[in-house]
Length: 493
Figure: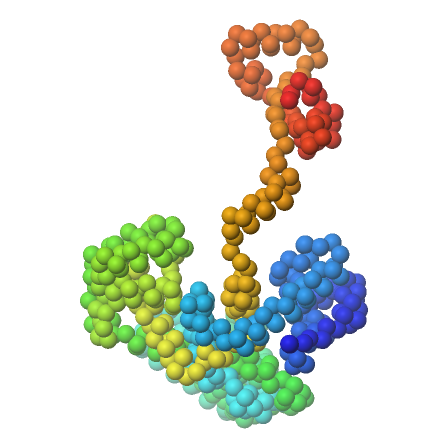
């Protein structure tokens, strides 16, 4: 049996502190509040995130109880996840089918991270960045703008001017005066010394070049916006923390710095997976799919019945391409396993075409990821993905707990009915009374006459009271959901 050590004494202390000080810093605590098998830990930050994410703070007035119940749920669900994989339920394809699309989505993310992001953001690249982190570069800049729709000759002329300014700087001309004379930089830093460190160097191409220059160097650098004439004024040293303390921070900075580059590389490679010049579409099939797709409920649940029925009668081909074809059966598999669109009234043939091509490409990436063994990295008992965490616990309930609950029989249902009928099935007799109250007897009589003459009660004044009365199990007549005196109750039931 798997054991866990719940640190209640620590938890109570943390909760007490949190209730008095977490308003300012609600999620900074990292104390371990539970351990499973001495190697899986739940920190107070994990617990606090869970409390707020699952609204335990709104379920309970007593926050200590909220934290204890939330922790109990976290531990129980984690034990389920451990047991799920120990029982090898993850190998049950039929059981896993309901979350296959979620797993594959995470596989694509893992593939992108491993094959593209990690090329630029890894321990080795972090070490290279760290080796230059103690460096700070000061420089001055003159900027010459390239106007929109400039001709090649105009750009050449601006470049020539930038080179002339560079020569003047190298010959000792006052940089500040040159900046006031030529610079088109709209910021207040034009001509003044700026300082850049490693973060700017990895996120900005111009800064990357400047960061590698020596003191006194003058360069003309071209960018999309114009020409930058820069001079390095000084190179200083700053103190940095040990590498292991900031390694992860550096890697995260590198991920952000190379985000656009990695995404462009990924999209470029993904688009090459299908030759769009060799596609043959079945227009009639597309029209049928468009018709289905316009139903608001189709991709939520209806497709699971509609498509198998259609496949049984006519498994038509939708697309033929260089590697084979996509028929209705394969379309159904892609929806279940890879991607699913949203139904929309304005869905067109082109929308379906784009979706199918995206699904095929994504499916190919999923297969590549599986070949690399990446599924083991995301689908396991210790997954940090909250969606997978919840789905695994749910499937465990289905496969292990629900399967042990005996199915209902007529005898069992009848017994349950007899035991619970007074509390569950007994309905109190209820009557609603509409009432209009007048301060003068004659007004009441006039209204009564109008009602006798055929005017509907509700139309007399347009305003009336609604009184609801019930007879309880003891035979007493009472107003329903009200503490006021039961007016007219003797004649209502």
